[in-house]
Length: 179
Image 1 (cartoon, helix red, strand yellow):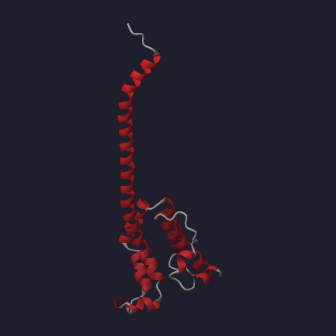
Image 2 (image 1 turned 30 degrees about the vertical axis):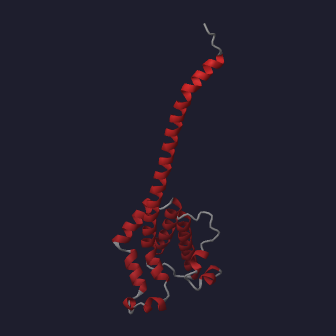
Image 3 (image 1 turned 120 degrees about the vertical axis):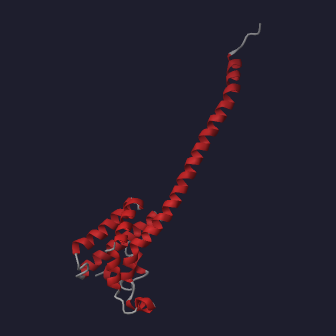
């Protein structure tokens, strides 16, 4: 009779365990890969949804901050007050729907920045920017909102501040900031 040593037992166990371990590790790797792929798919869909929502939420602010010359340049806007158009959009049921949607799909920082901006308007009633200080505060809140949108879209390490987010479309941002 052949005497078996502990090395023979380890070798036997290893020859049985190796294929089992390969199968288990393959299954775990496949599940991890599938989970990552699914998460990336969902993030892409969420990003598209966020972009559409952000565009709708920002539209009244874009209208308000458009220069009068640029607003009147478009034939369909001639003789139409941009403030009234923006206000009607802000007060519409559709805008409320978009705000609700933003609270569901926006990042925490975006929702918080939007809440702060809207609370500013709610606290001012019909006269949102009655002084230079109010205008500065409103512009800072809008810039923060835009900055948080930028971060939520993948630019987490941005070096811009809230005022830099406004400079490209407002000629007097620096004078408001330094006032």
